[in-house]
Image (cartoon, rainbow, N blue to C red; front, side, top):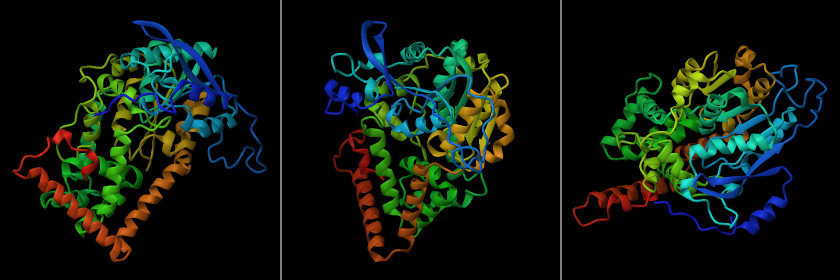
Length: 474
């Protein structure tokens, strides 16, 4: 279970004040902790003002321009809402905001309460868990817009950020000029759709392209090579960063007695990512209550084959159980009147394209753009696509962008995503081609996994399953 952190060196008030003095783009709004606590806390947001665009001698803009911007100037600032809530800190998106400013955009990005510079009260203590809830986050957004004197904004939201964008547009339509909803979250039931989509591809083999991989995985599960109940998150991660081809390569290696190192490494990275917090990057400890109790993350975990929700369900043990969402966002989305673009990657198994299609059909006049070969969160994996969409939306020309969908799809992936994909490819190639040393390590990883599985099924007294460190499981 995840315990609450004590303010450490990176979180104490003095250290935060020192860090804030190094930055000139962070603003502070003093907000009530919640309705039951009138005391104020400093909520931070970043504002990156537009810079003059440098002219390229050939294209007429800075750098290559496969998708030319619309000629009018932006009409409103852009409110950027990344996925989260645990990753909604301003620091990881500095480069993105500067890039958007280079496109002539005025960019506002609010930190999520409980994350980064916005997790402490005036005494330097963590905000209370009860104060981190959707109702207060929505009021935080309005307070930031008021402080920034932004009467209207073009809202660009990814995942959970798209969930907040829908709430803002439905409940406060006067503040929203236009919407770009990337890989949208629309309901707690979305994860059940994602769970079925993953199983259809890699367990049931309903698609011809993945049917051989699904058959091989079922055989590996039968002979005990793969703990199929815990394999969902690994298969999902490999699919997101390498596609069906990478999943097929990994399954083939496992069938040949190799691949254990890659499998174990991905599993370890995932468990650390879910169960450990990294200051200013991913902070689960305070935001997990909202994520699980109000958004229902992990609520549909069933422990069946290839369940991608098991890690989320394990994290949810630390907070009160999910009952229902405080807002019916699917119903509220029907009230949205702002011009809306919905973006989806065809390879997204976290928010599958069917979710984006259903959302686009509910919002009057919304347009859907599906990017072939893209996975979840274009903000993080295909940033240039989202930057173009943000500018066109802020210029009031978002409705014309679907005509340029083919050009959007040709824009390159983000450097971080390219690095992850390349690293996965190298790991698979190493286990396939390198000599006996790696094969021996892979075999040893498999023996250790089998030993742990035997220990779990041994008739001797053993630890309770819920007390086992998830990093012990492959």
